[in-house]
Image 1 (cartoon, one colour):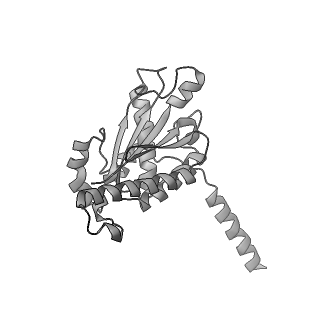
Image 2 (cartoon, rainbow, N blue to C red; image 1 turned 135 degrees about the vertical axis):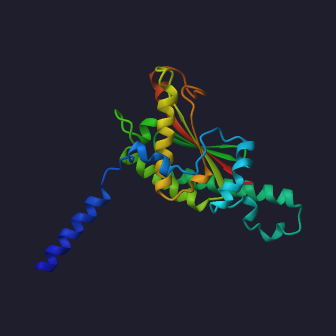
Image 3 (cartoon, helix red, strand yellow; image 1 turned 90 degrees about the vertical axis):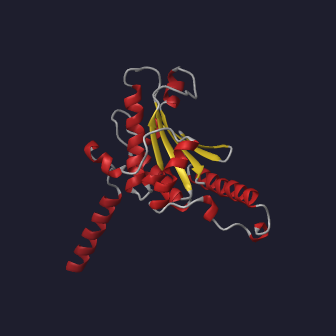
Length: 225
């Protein structure tokens, strides 16, 4: 009887733990989680400057990935480009297959891959915190990013144009929360660039539906060279 009771209690604890709501850690701890991240646009010069830090933190470059045997005797630059294109294509397909949810999309821009996360798909409606659905989505993304680790990522937050005075702060808050979550799930912060762009670069109109779409976080993935 005692063994049965212990089993039931253990099962209930496991169930409760699995259903626990995620909450972002205290803001005062964010610099600890995001140590190594860069708070700037992920330009090519910025990536080049960050590369020694990235490599020193255990990062790897696309050039370290084994090329198919048929490329062994080809031009190195062409081979590296082919490996990069194939690597990012596989990343795109895996993200696309794993993130078929409303408010989430995966797009290709050259060799870059962009994940668009509409705010209401990953955060609580009335408070600034990641929702349980958002935590599940970000956990899936983190798992794939750990597999495809020869990439830099830019996490950029965006708002609509309704509160221009607060737009930068609100958008940076969203981006940082996503960055903290990924850091908590073992994504190397030396890969990260984090920015808040406010109401810049809208992707929809300024009607009610458009504003919901413009409030978003984008994760742009670029091959590490």
